[in-house]
Length: 329
Image (cartoon, rainbow, N blue to C red; front, side, top):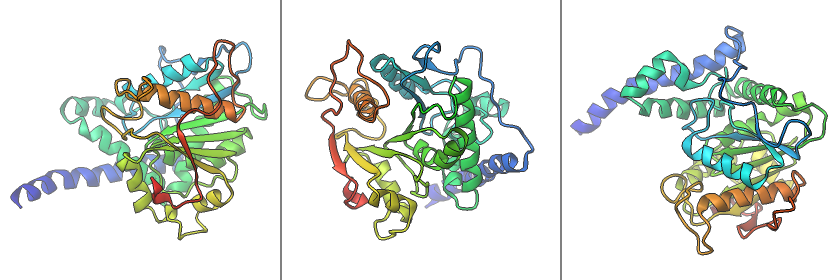
């Protein structure tokens, strides 16, 4: 009991401060107190992969999990991005978007957070966790969606994307990045009018994102992913009983397909992005995840098989229609 009171006394004020800070950023965006950042560090390109001298088959925007705190990719996210570029060089890939900052301000570059990181690195994760819940909060959600949608659109245009070009845009999101991806669809459609394909990897989101203007959403999940499953339990909009929620409307419209990546876990040595955990066929979890993402994009017409590649359009990940209850995962 004394230990509980001690932890509550320490983390209670921290969580309260984090909640207030997370709301401040989206309110600062809405009030116009600060302009979102658009420039990147000198060593970070606006896109990697397909050369800019001709249109790529698709633009892929990777929205990382709560570890994202700078323009460069996290360790795990960087490995996935590299695998995607190697497996589908026809794609132009963007990994610099800040899903947990409406002002596009990398957390690690802020002086106060740089000091905190040396003494309390956990706070960086708490900040992004709180931002995920702010993005899901009905009071702030419209502003947050508009801010991140605008950030993605601006970064795409800086990377060479032309509105109305018809080139597909793929939003690949991991964990809490799914909340941002599903929420950004409307703003991206307004700004770019591009074909939009969403792929969530262990997606943690509340099911309120309007997917009307998305062509399809592929949900990559695993029976061993407890964190993703919690999201299907705690958010009522994900429950099959609420038939009028945005998520359930999209399910009935046939816009959501589940692909199983068992036995991957959400994080850890057996995660979706682990280069060390091996499958019976000898591939790593990272290889299978990259193969699955590329196969789904190719099957959707977002990129074409290169002469050196003989991968099938649909790999061995188990595919399940989203007509069954969400708790199937």
